[in-house]
Image (tube, rainbow, N blue to C red; front, top):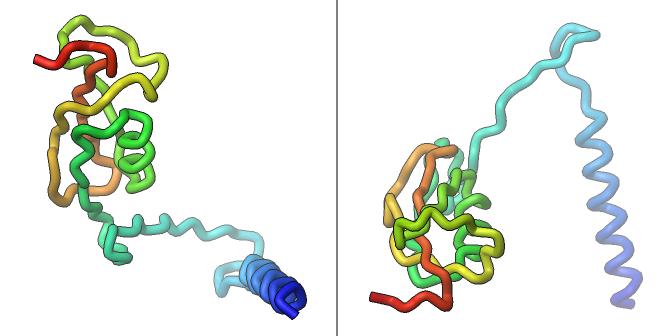
Amino acid sequence: MRTTALRTSVALVAAATLLAGCASSSGTPGTTESTPSPSLTADGGTSGMVDVISQTNILLVSAQETLEARDLVVEVVDVTGQGRMVEDPTQWVVVAQDPETGTVASGSTVVLEVLRTDDPRS
């Protein structure tokens, strides 16, 4: 019974997706309208603004994924000032962030200051 219900659900979703893609627009035939899709905010709104969540004390790989999923640009800086390149983001931890929290425009840059996990903390 569950298998049948699952297959039916999957088929309905696939059909709805297909039909949505085939819907005709009211534009002139042969032209394509391009409307930018607004970014979603954390609360599900579409204002073009997104909430920045603090990523301090989190592995860089997770911090990047979280911020990029919110349509933010991530800039990574070695907090030691040595300018080391981050080759493996699973080996770095975020120790500071700018902006730390708040609401910014979609596409804004968030600077993450990072330290290797094997570096001593001062």
